[in-house]
Length: 110
Image (cartoon, rainbow, N blue to C red; front, side):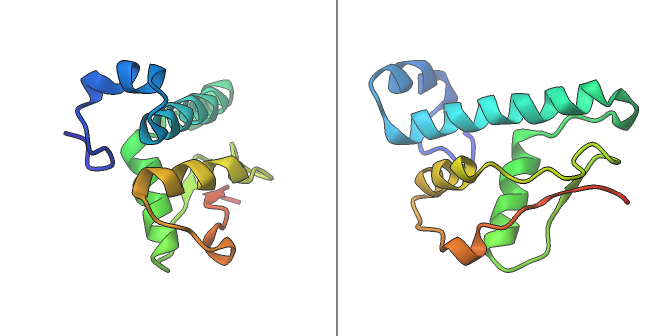
């Protein structure tokens, strides 16, 4: 079982169709992750995709006050985390995330 979901991933489709807030948040985050990974593939020299665990563990680190960032060469230069990500992540973890903790954690190696 995924540590961020309180239901088996096999139930995702049904729960999403039923409007379950966590399932909808998870689905949105997966779509956002696909966008980020597509950007990495466009800048193919930087290679490795971001896993869902890396994305969510880094976000968790950031809201816990630890330094965390995702770097893929210069791919994310000038990029910022979509504010909707923080809304969906908040639903997923069942915790309000103060605005001051909703920082960017995409970075470049510059």
